[in-house]
Every structure is written in structure tokens, then in C-alpha cells.
Amino acid sequence: MSALRFSTRFNPMLSNRFFIQTNSLLFSFSSPLSPSLKIPSKSFRCSFNSLLHSNGGTSRSFSNSSPISGLEDELVGYIFGKKKATEVAHLVWRHVLHKGDVVIDATCGNGHDTVAMLKMVADESGRGCVYGMDIQTEALENTSSLLDETVTQKEKELVKLFPICHSRMDEVLPENTAVRLVAFNLGYLPGGDKGIITTSKTTLLALETAKKMLMSGGLISLVVYVGHPGGREELETVEGFASGLCVDDWICCKFQMLNRPLAPLLVFIFKR
Ligand SMILES: C[S@@+](CC[C@H](N)C(=O)[O-])C[C@H]1O[C@@H](n2cnc3c(N)ncnc32)[C@H](O)[C@@H]1O
Image (tube, rainbow, N blue to C red; front, side, top):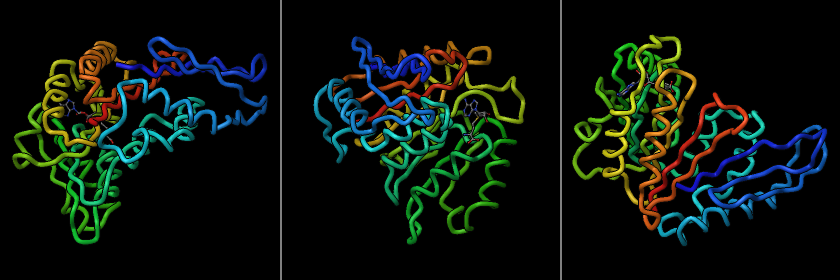
């Protein structure tokens, strides 16, 4: 996996440089010494494109030069703590999704991700579909309530909720459905029982299933938490899965704050 490691070794008092690190390369950028931490986005854009091209040739299924070109400002927001990991994930989804797409929320929780992806895929003629799942009925009830509060009845009808483990996601979709996004927001239900968490074993099974179901040009998106017992092991499982994917067919990257060891991480697995 080409790990795009963002080191926030940017200290406006001491230095006007910050760094982006891949497996083997370290890029350093100049930035004006300003209190607003303004980054020269032009140089940032060039760098992201070249990083992704160096990860295995040209893209076949993405219309842009890279699946994340145009997202530089959001990524800078994440680096400097102005955007939450989930917000960055949503922005990447928006970049990949089209109206009418079929998507999977593999961990519904309180429904925020379900609502976000529904808004991106639902169109006026009633196309688009979100398959959502969670092992806790409390989570599915919360998701259903949030949908009632935030979307129309017509939009809600495009969501199908299932009380199952995400390793069984293939059982609830019609065979050969073209799936554009499978999203995981791992860990425990916020506000719920912190003892009920996603586990390495079933997360890996779900990733293997998602890999088979994803269409070309699709994305497996993961927000990974490492602050709870088992979280770091689960991250290693996700990294091991992504690292083993063929570079000709997949683009895999990780966003991690090196000096905030408990901050959530983002893993994006793009299918070319
Ligand atoms: C961090 S929460 C998800 C947050 C949610 N996406 C949101 O927007 O509010 C993680 C959820 O994963 C669920 N979960 C745990 N193991 C699971 C499994 N094997 N299959 C499906 N869901 C699971 C938990 O019950 C919990 O609700």
C-alpha cells in the first residue's frame, strides 16, 4: 500500500515547511509564515497527482488524472485539524459517486454516513440505493430516525436496512449489482455500548466480500479508530488487506497524523 503519511512537522514559529511522506519519498513544501497556516494549493495539487501516478500507472476508470485531484483543500483541512476524518471521507465519496449509484453503508451506527451517501446518490426519478447494515438494532433504529428527520419519504424508500454482520453484505444485494461505494466507519456506536465493536476477523471478511462486489471506478472507504482495545489490531488488518491488492487494479492510500497517535485514520481503496 502506498501510505501517504502526513507529518505535521509544520511549526509556524520555527519553520515554513511541511512534509508529505510516501513509502520511500519525502516531499517538502514551502508555506508562507502566516497565522492562518495558508498553504500554496497549486504546489500541493501537483504533488498529489504525481504521488498517485507513481502508484502504478495511469487511471483507467477515473475521469480525472487521479481519484482525489481537486480535494487538496479538504486534505489540508484534515492535516491542520479543521476537518474531521468523517468529513474528509464524505468529500472523497462526493468525488466518486454519481446520482443513481448503488452504495453500501457497512456500519450504519447513528446514520450520519447513511444520510450523507443517500443525498449523493438519490435522484429525482427515484434511482440510487443505499444498502445499510449494522449488528445492533439500536443502531438501525437510530439510522431510521435520522432518516425520518433529514430526508423525504421518497428518499428514505431508497434505503434498505439490514440487521446483519457486514461480512454477509453479498446476501442482501441482488446478484451482480454494480456497487460504487462500500463505506466502513469502524469501532463502537457513539453513545452506545462501547463493548460492541467491529472486529478484525469480520472486518477482513467484509473487505474480501466488498472487493468482489465493487465496480470499476468504485471505492472502499474506511475510517479507522485506534484509541479503543482492538482498534490498532484492526488497523493492521485493514493495512494488510490493502497492501496485498494488485497495483494494476487498485489504488490504496492511508491518511494518518503521525504526531496524533490516537487520531482516526482514513484508508481509501480505489478500484481502477
Ligand atoms: C463508529 S459506528 C458507525 C457510525 C456510523 N457510520 C454513523 O454515521 O453514525 C460503528 C458501528 O459498527 C457496528 N458494527 C460492529 N460490528 C459490526 C459488524 N460485524 N457488521 C456490521 N456492523 C457492525 C456497530 O454496532 C456500530 O454501530
